[in-house]
Image (cartoon, rainbow, N blue to C red; front, side, top):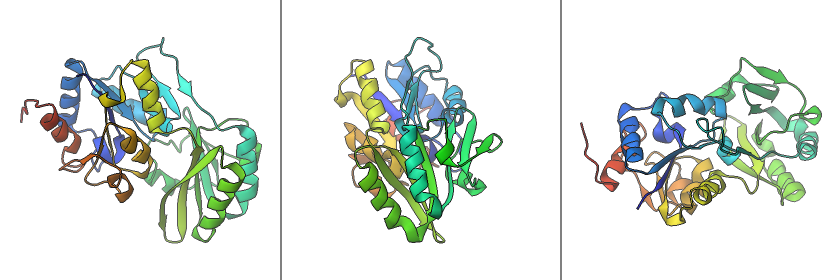
Length: 273
């Protein structure tokens, strides 16, 4: 059976330094040569993911923005799928949350649109480019985002969550990335969009069944993908929420060739080391 193999980048395929390990590149290309389809599925924006895509040498679709954008950099005939948050929703959301926003941003192509841009956000979201930042109030935005990142005072966590659920419950969801030193980091995104929804689209595109999907992930944004995949594999270094919904787990971390070693064993590949 041929498989669609989806890999998250940060915390999964990349090591602690954010680099690809040569063993991973070799194993993924070995599987591609055997007819399997290897896809990157990342929360990074396109510009932050494309260097890794090219380094591996892929020619398959690329899932970025946590499923908000599906493209194929090597195939101009592939119909790009990009899903945006409606501007009226973004404007209304900002007006009602502005008082407790410490910083907010989203990226579109090579540009970061930000309200009170804070460079420490780059520690959490790889691939954003602070060299091209447009600062503005989001109530005046004319560019539609695929999703938003909010850094707020942790005292207002319940306020934000309740407002999003009550005002936009049919449209938006929020994802808490963490709380640290009185700050809470949220991602706000379209309810029906995730890495899982993007992979469902690609399964249909390739006329493949769910039973042919293997996915690897470590973070809170991987929960749907790992939960919904026929074989959803959590990284051993992953968060508890991912481990709670996985079907299996790697024996090794992202810093120890975890995905490559799992795939070598699963597909009975020859380990050249």
